[in-house]
Length: 526
Ligand code: G4P
Image (cartoon, rainbow, N blue to C red; front, side, top):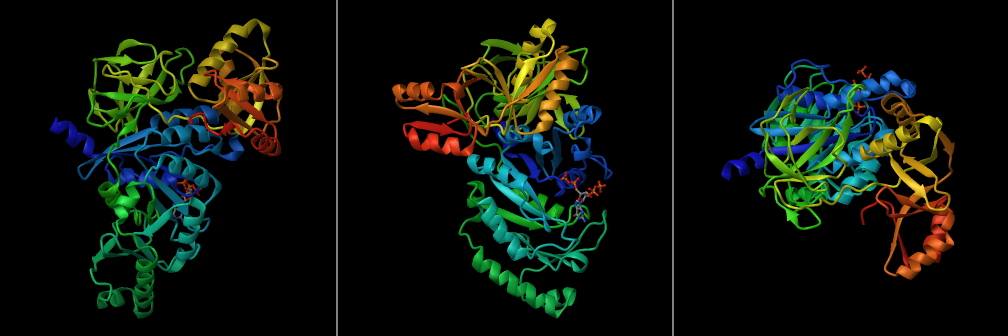
């Protein structure tokens, strides 16, 4: 038992999120370098689909390949087992990122010092806030000119709606960047622009020490002291670690991922204060990490090889120990299954896993048994909550373009939706099928995959909608009345839940005003 608890306590499972180009790939790579998981820079490929390649199918295929290899990167560092979950770089795949965030225990957000908080970061932070996920922030590219650090902290607080507390503080930036004072470890870290060297760091417990003046000059030393005093005053928190773990406070580090500066400090603090696997709420009860084995599927990745329609289902272990060749219970199907080909993800390579623990991710080979959200357990009947679908932002009617292949189309759509590629709604008035996505690229991917993997042809018909809202009411009569009044705009999602299709924000507002008994939800879990 105590071995199980040790294994669980040393696990840190997290995702790095950012707006494209802030430096997520670079930071990931540097973390892997520190963990000894890779040995040369450049080994981690960016999984970005560049805008120019938006309709380059080979690019998409390549992207899918890369993202399997780097979906989860596990390595050991300083006695800890670290699992970094990768998130797609392209915003059209944001739904994928939302789901990945359900499988992590904490998050590191990368922000570009010159650009500050950008749209994608803001959206992803909303998901973290909803789930109370602890977040740490890395302000990157300090070797470039950027915003004033105090202004940046204000911006973070306002835009991300979270309190912050700097744990390192920059001394100048851009061409004059001298380094940071590491508040967490009470050290002065001096910057030398190089991609490989280890940072020179000098322990300074007392910020009044003359050593600081010697290292960075009188003027900068005085300014640093003044800044640090200000920080103590403004960003005070009685128990910062507790506030961080509750998701109320984000520690902030400054550095330059490209120059390998500030990354080790971030990592050292991270492993110490970031949470090990936390209890997870299932419909039936709270599941504690030390309980018997349980986990859920948060991602399904179709295989690249079109000749074998096999997939990898990614299982996040919520509790206990997973063992190879053991009978486990697939709760939705109500059947026992054994996995002898399950894989663990150790940075860049997949290997067959004999055992894994709460916090880890294992890849289960799948031939159509799994859907997103499925639970696998040692025997318990559990349904994990917290895998919501969010209202899509783009909608199109999907039509069959080859009458001979109607069956293939139905099957293809069904499986792609189970894989979580997009959401399907059925309009209750005209029976037409609607596909909802967060970006144009997903429509192209669906069309391409339907053709190449299922031999089905589809056509998209335009549909102008603003949002799909899940609706409910305490009064069945009120709900029926609303559905009657809005009959042209009522749909069912894939699970048969009622959805209101609002064609503009005005229409939605009016509906909210006129039908007070109806609750409108922007995510499927309420
Ligand atoms: P992303 O995954 O968040 O999209 O960002 P990525 O790491 O790919 O970084 C985006 C660009 O920013 C890259 O340049 C990268 O080299 C650069 N970068 C990352 N960290 C730093 C930093 O600390 N300082 C500076 N000055 N630049 C940084 P690129 O030219 O777009 O790509 P590449 O050709 O260098 O790969």
